Length: 258
Image (cartoon, rainbow, N blue to C red; front, top):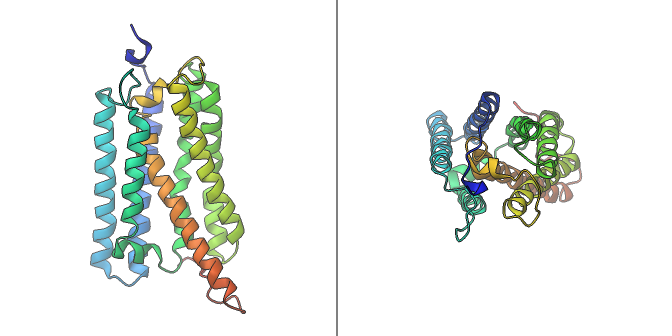
């Protein structure tokens, strides 16, 4: 039997960690938009609608991606387009486009939002699942070590970065955090694709991330995390230009979180 058709047995702790992490990411993203809409003066009703609507839509895609993975459509097979990178790219484009919707853009640009945009990254500590799967012989160290350790480091750093921004400091640190966070995601995704398509011929393969529950990470969680990073860098760039145009430091946008 071909290797890519063999379904991998995933331990229950990996299921729990992955599902809790993805649910937490979706919920925290919805909460960020809700609070941003409130701070932007959009009113409680619109804020609730934006927060709940984002959770429903993101949760809907997570569920859809789970169905796709359950049917084996992300598996690498000869003659089939690679499902993981296509899903990642498509969802990323949609999410970035959604940030330009006027009500969403206003919520994301609200005072104090920059610090809140970093908080959902805390759930990246569930990258420990890659290390667990490596220890069980289901993922190669070439992928699991940089992906797992990078996610854990980013997740642990996120609340401290958010706190520094909320205090009105740490702009340069925030830039580095978001750039390195994106690099971590790019490296992990690239390694997964290269190993999965046998460009790097290592054992075991990265087949486990094409199946549930790990498939939810590259197809749903990673595009959302990328969008948060890109949005943060956009806000930091705007704040940098504003800072250069002032002489007092007032208007930097790094206002304490209320």
